[in-house]
Length: 254
Image (cartoon, rainbow, N blue to C red):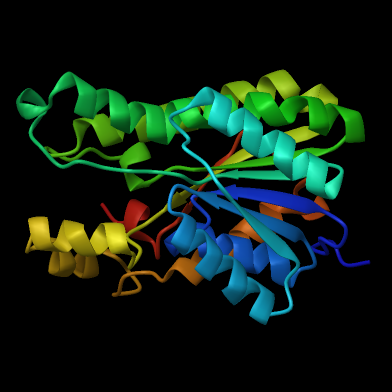
């Protein structure tokens, strides 16, 4: 059996109906995992589910509001009920509102923190009993370059993504003896719907990123797939508490 084989594993991906989340769901599915994509938009969920099934991936989709604890808990219970277990959790759901710090309304700030960080706690906690029951678990938290750097128009986003890294370390430390590995992926500048809007809001961003990134271009969502498969598989059984940049070298180019 390959170190990267995910046959008979069940993976739950929040924000799995598009962009990075969908690409990770596809990568896990192509290695044999049964995949559940979860998101707020029922139509996007159904479209993603069909696309994965067209690739011969066994999958389901569920509607979820990651800002709602009951909704997250129901998602986890529904996944376990359908497949009998949960082996892999990818906490990918995220959002952003670009403003100078003094211009945020409290509800905007709270929404970003809740979606990007608090939801990881809720979903991880809900999955914990299922990991313990099977004696195995993999949690993959999606951070950002803003886990490392800061933007003048992204203080809430940076706070949430910085928190992702520390939450990952703490969870890894706490759950290691349960054979649960917890790691983070820090995507660089990836061409997604969210970053398309960023390039409209910040016209110079496209060239600035290309100039700083050693490979000379933005990444694609599927560039995250290999790292996710590694962190979801037994190849990473002795890897926990890490945050791996997948950024074309952006973070090392001072």
